[in-house]
Image (cartoon, rainbow, N blue to C red):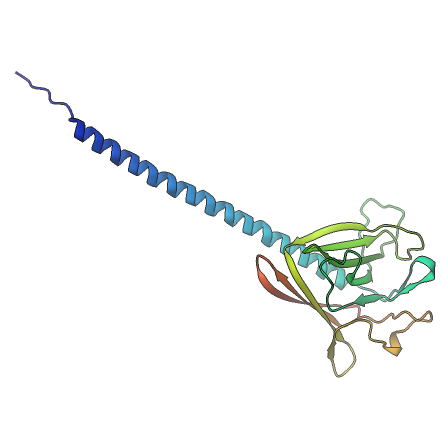
Length: 213
């Protein structure tokens, strides 16, 4: 005679408890892994955005040229203008504003390859503005490109090319040899040092050389 013995209620409850525990641990581990992966992806996107912004800054500064411009009502702007820092709410205050060459024209449009660009800080965001032509005799709004978010502060200084080399807080610095006939300076700094205080990455300092200087 064969006696079949099943599981007791206690054994079933213990088995269910073990299964539930294993499932909970597996879910927590999976959720933690997913959250870590998303955070890594976000960090990677932020790093790529920072890298693109620095590359654009470097490309602009390496193409800087000695070309002052005429703006509304005959006002003159120097070839390169820079200040040490700007107020966070200064939508129309440019940290740097300069003329550059090498504006690519793949569609062969009827325009110059020269460009006027400006960098400004507004609402903790770094912006790059550019104008479709250098001499802005009309009220032409710039094309605005957001570059970086979470920018707490930006500090700049400029390297004078004259010996002995020295850093200055503003540009131009009244170099007589770099002044044009209309009083605007055609001089360029030898280099620009930019220090960014970023919400995600802390303080980052980059040095950009200007070969045209």
